[in-house]
Image (cartoon, rainbow, N blue to C red; front, side, top):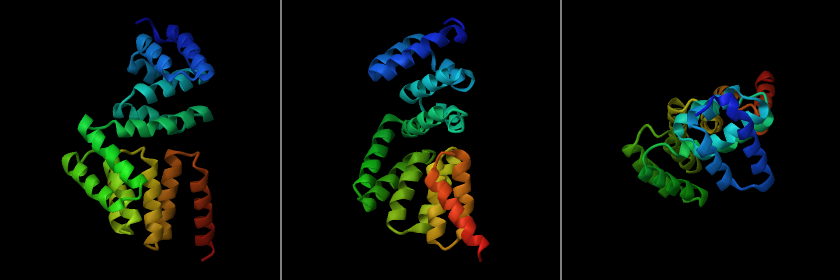
Length: 220
């Protein structure tokens, strides 16, 4: 492969074509043909604004959990489009951790949570954690189920474990904040929401929550 800088115009062109035609299959195929994942990761942090957008989009399609650090840093990029692309894509990387069978079980847990079958979601997430206790998203999904089951202390522990395993997991930080609120600890909740904003500064609802808690605590 030639030097990355020589490939930058091509990546930009493929990105513009994607925006025009919205043909993700062609974008993925052409990017895969000309770029390694390592090159895309470098361009996501060191390229021009358009190149960073294209690289982050491509990593979302092609990357695995190993690209989590690059995508996590992109959540704080100077360009808002890069940040939005990273936020939309990083969750897909989280789902691609573990083996294929573990990923399939995770998707089952996600569907159960989405359909509000929280008891079964918690059971299946526990089974996944027992099989792969380093799978951060499994802990997060069990935290979601346990929160909905009003098991707030258990959910808090699961959120904490998720963010220990994946320090960019801003939803787990938000989850910790909500658990602390349910457990009547506004100070700890505020700290967690601030952490979530440090990871992903574009969450305006969390920013509003931070402002509300700050005013509430100052008024005591």
